[in-house]
Amino acid sequence: MLTLVFSKDESISNTVVETYEQIYFSRNLVPLQKAKNLLELMRDATLTDITCIEELLKKFIQKDIFEKDVFKQLWVSYAKIFENKF
Image (cartoon, rainbow, N blue to C red; front, side):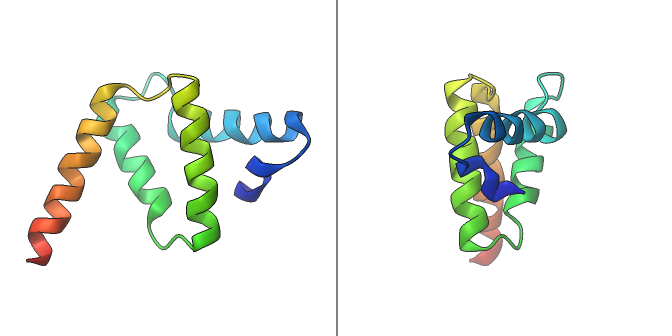
């Protein structure tokens, strides 16, 4: 379903974006939960999945769905992952 974010039919693409927004990135979720949801989507993602998630993020940023705190939480998470590897 995620690949439908690239559908030429704008109503299909918009529906995919709205569905992922409602399930994973609802405005009533705290930034930490949004960051965790994004990391969970990325877990075991294929290159195709990552490309689709990137497009979703682009659309979410255009719609101002992610607060600055979501990005801060992502940096904290990546820093922890990096620290654990070295």
